[in-house]
Image (cartoon, rainbow, N blue to C red; front, side, top):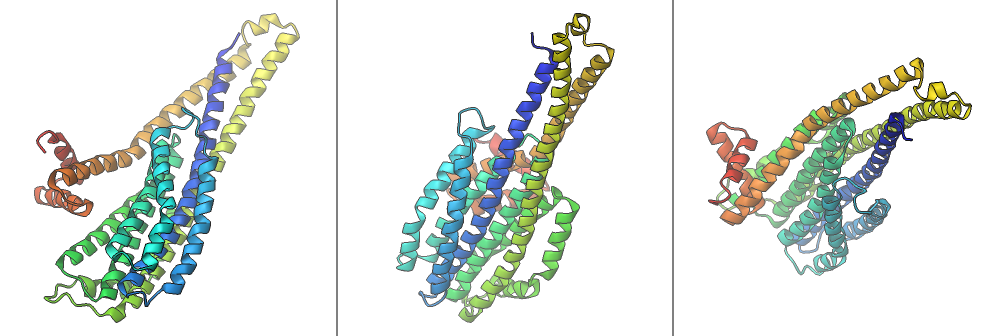
Length: 404
């Protein structure tokens, strides 16, 4: 006959299984971070290559493609390691769908690269293709964060996702600004998009730091102080300054690319620190859960031994000492699970806010026939004009979905 302790052990085994899946997912997130970084660099090189008519970054771009392909094989290996059995992975439907989209994008890379090499497409089209692939990779990280059942690991994943998203906006700014400088032109629409990219990355970095520990915040502050912000800000002012003819000096493209790359490389160091923190949390939680499982199994083994020894009067009731031990374990596990649930609700509030804002942007994009940047700008401007939170405006837009 199964006892309460039997089910307590089963609950702990389920928890360990979830943590082990999270450990695999966290390893995948780390590999995705490396691939995103490599693809961001390839995107920037491709933009300057196209904008310069193929005169710049030809050799560097070829070398970078080799680097990207090597990391992509590692990511595919991490995908293969995931348990794809139905019902085994929390949030599996959305996670696996995101992975399918990413694999399709990776399969399409050779054709995109061939068209870039032949200069058969413009820099805007090239950037858009890379942005779609990188957005798919970041969506995998988002689903991983949304699937976490441990609050500390969830916080680390939320921090990782937001930092990677901010870094991606920085990469988009590098590619976008590099293209503008290399082409020698930036009109008012370009300047507005440039400013949007700057604002977006800073917002993501702020959220990431809110969910990070002190060591990560200190590393980020040090990276910001060490990065070539003075050069970057000077070139930003040149690129975003209103001018009648929209003319930019093409010779500034190399300086822009170098300044952005130095800053993004420093971001990569902070990102790696976040990934290390995530792996350490998973290892610590698994080790702790296994130790607690061993304690519970030891008590169950003691009961079984007593039963085999014929101590029927103690197996009918465990005995005062074991009764107290089991009751304490049940109470502690119940309290811990409740505390974990409360903390998870707090952490996931940030993810839920993003979901609502993304849904509102999608509704505006469909109703007003605008792109994502313009939809976000509409939400942000309304929030400023009405002195409301962006989330509140998004909820109002969704409430009006039938009218829109």
